[in-house]
Amino acid sequence: MTWLWATFFSFAVVSGTVELTGSRDRAVEKRRDYSGVVIWLEGARPPDSPKLQLRAEMLQKGKRFVPHVLAVPVGAAVRFPNADPIFHNAFSNFSGQPFDVGLYPPGASRSVQFRRPGVVRVFCNIHPTMSAVIVVVASPYYAVSGRTGAFEIPGVEPGGYRLRIFHERAAGETLERLERTIQVSGEKLSLPPIVISESGYIEVRHKNKYGKDYPAEVEDHLVYPGAKR
Image 1 (cartoon, rainbow, N blue to C red):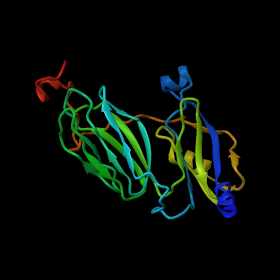
Image 2: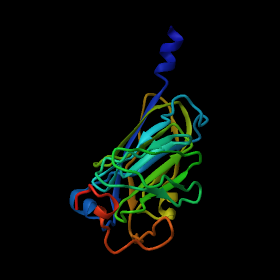
Image 3: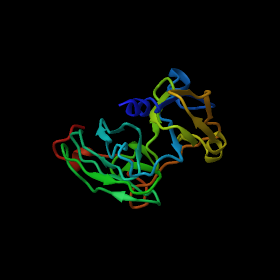
């Protein structure tokens, strides 16, 4: 029993905050919304660890993907339930693992398993304003920042790790410079603030799943007769 007690308290909580600078996004400029940054620790136990959460959900509601940013471990299956009164068609042309769940009606759901680490940019083939990001990590230790920028990674075993970060409006070189090696010991590790610059970010319009431009106007009532305009 003494050994089990000691093992339990060997796990640590790694926490910190992120701050976004140089942003043109109104949510960041006006409301200081620093959510959606993914932080994870590499060099952890193998991806088949029983600690991993291998099921997740990205809801389609109000012509939006919720959450907008989702982090999952390699091997996780993500459900895409349709809570709108119209059809949706989630897809990704991510080179590591493209997927297309096809057109499906309100109340239905589709699922995709992600077998490789990487950044998966998700879109709807009908609604061009719908976009999301799924970050697939080869680690059981990850978190997504909240509105205040705070994050917390619980249950981290002692040892050395590579801290990695993803933010959809930051350049790859910017994120690489923020990587660092950390040493976890004790019960808590508070990291220094992580400042991420969005300077130079330019949003690029995406194509539909066929590589073509979206129609100028989407008429949902033509896709689904019972849909509200």
